[in-house]
Length: 263
Image 1 (tube, helix red, strand yellow):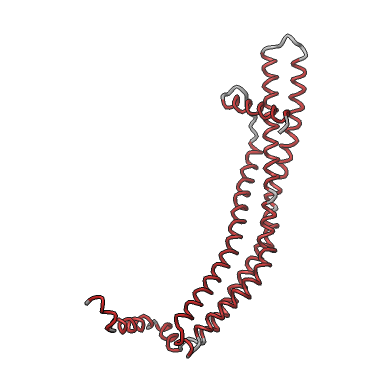
Image 2 (spheres, helix red, strand yellow):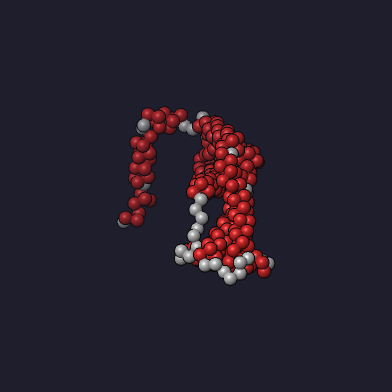
């Protein structure tokens, strides 16, 4: 920071303190305050959307990776018993293909059509915040000069040039502040209104990508289902699967090895 910048920062800090103590009257602009609140709402929502969009892609990868791991574990659990019908192998192949083909194929389009456009939209916020910060600094400068003029009016100085100079400085400060303030009041609503047409294509892409993933997952699982025991499917559909599972558990309890710990 330059010496000039440092002095401005110190003066503005002093002005802020005097405003809090009531020594300097603060300019209130309800119109700007409304637009700034609307922008803050947009900023918060967009940043959350960016975070959740990235989280969705990460979760998709994690889910298919977890499916692959459980498929590998089930295949190992069945062992040679699964060789007869091959269902565990088919299931493992289906989830591996879903992870290798579908998810990896969707990664690039998702980044290009969803994640990157949202990130670009959020990348404008630092510039907007810098403009708001500059506007607030210029408002402090204007209020400080306005206060100086009022003091000179209330208590005239022996130097007759001080009041005209202070009034001129206050007018210049007001013009700089008004220009920035009016620009923000005009452009902040435009930025907020642009969010819908800007994000609509990304929303449509997200829906299509989700549809493709769900369709692929359903198709692959439906193919696995045909290798399941037909009687198991019928019992599940008829609500009798619980009784069958209980019969198997009772058979396990009847084994002498399961009762050894009680003796």
